[in-house]
Length: 313
Ligand SMILES: *[C@@H]1O[C@H](CO)[C@@H](O)[C@H](O)[C@H]1NC(C)=O
Ligand SMILES: *[C@@H]1O[C@H](CO)[C@@H](O)[C@H](O)[C@H]1NC(C)=O
Ligand SMILES: *[C@@H]1O[C@H](CO)[C@@H](O)[C@H](O)[C@H]1NC(C)=O
Ligand SMILES: *[C@@H]1O[C@H](CO)[C@@H](O)[C@H](O)[C@H]1NC(C)=O
Ligand SMILES: *[C@@H]1O[C@H](CO)[C@@H](O)[C@H](O)[C@H]1NC(C)=O
Ligand SMILES: *[C@@H]1O[C@H](CO)[C@@H](O)[C@H](O)[C@H]1NC(C)=O
Image 1 (spheres, protein in one colour):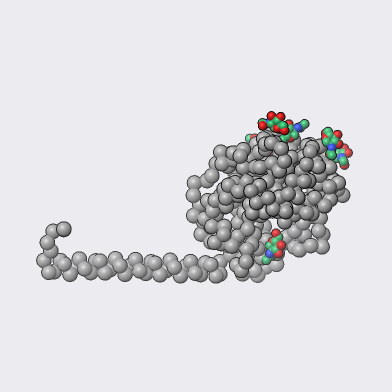
Image 2 (cartoon, protein in one colour):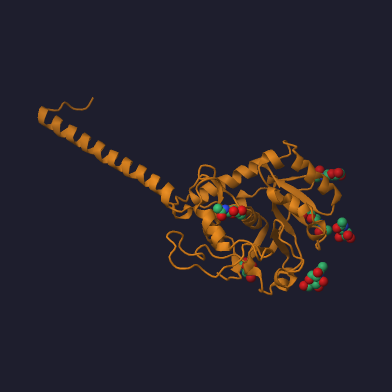
């Protein structure tokens, strides 16, 4: 018990408590309504970032995150220099092909072809990171993707553990396993379930947003960038625009930059900025947060010697 109070100071005491409660309630209401506003009106990436201590991705790595589809290979690839070739049409007319081919390791994504685009993006592939949704497109054209010029490339599949996990032994898993037995020159890995969870945690740590609660899907670009940081000392990224490239999200008054196809191999496909902006502000259903991801990449660039070219930034 505190000291006894006489009537007057007891009243003062009560006033102070009431005032404190009033201030607290006001703050709570303001905070709550801010959150509501944010979730209705604010594009995903503008939302407050409470970024925690940056994750040391080199230590975060760990070799056990990749499971071979066949045999007992382990993902031990390490490269001094890597070229990360994006699928954006910004790579077109870069004439960077021979520079890319001279890089120790070349990383590509999904079913982005090299055939017919060699002068801009080269013809070698060391690592290809493939989303579960692109598996069939990759495997259907083995000349393009599996008879690799490196003779010994690695293909890493990412996807929900219930589809790609070893334990699930689903159709997709068995399908890739058969392919991996046929192409014994190549190494096929899936990202393990615990590593998939780590990718979600990483997204939370870097953006302050829970991936599932914020209805976000990680992009193949996110997986590929992290894998590149794990395995490469230096990374040169081809064809990735900076996070601010597509302009302010809402409201959109000025016309954005010149239209550029989202994928270099689909010249009549959707516009890249439109794809980024629509995904970034999408609320119903799950969306990729391409712009938020690039903001994170920009931070990582300072920590892990990542440079960007075509466009340079
Ligand atoms: C991998 O498997 C081969 C036979 O399939 C075996 O000879 C080799 O010792 C194994 N390596 C490891 C590290 O388990
Ligand atoms: C092929 O790749 C594997 C794993 O990435 C590596 O251990 C092996 O040394 C490579 N072989 C050749 C001939 O480069
Ligand atoms: C790949 O490119 C190099 C030079 O850029 C060339 O010498 C080589 O023939 C090309 N290989 C294929 C399979 O196109
Ligand atoms: C496997 O690698 C060897 C040596 O690099 C090469 O001669 C052979 O053509 C490759 N096989 C396939 C199916 O790519
Ligand atoms: C950083 O990477 C670039 C290109 O990838 C390379 O030229 C440069 O030497 C690297 N710097 C350091 C400090 O490793
Ligand atoms: C989001 O991006 C994906 C491509 O990864 C695309 O298929 C989808 O249509 C986009 N969604 C919107 C709303 O633009």
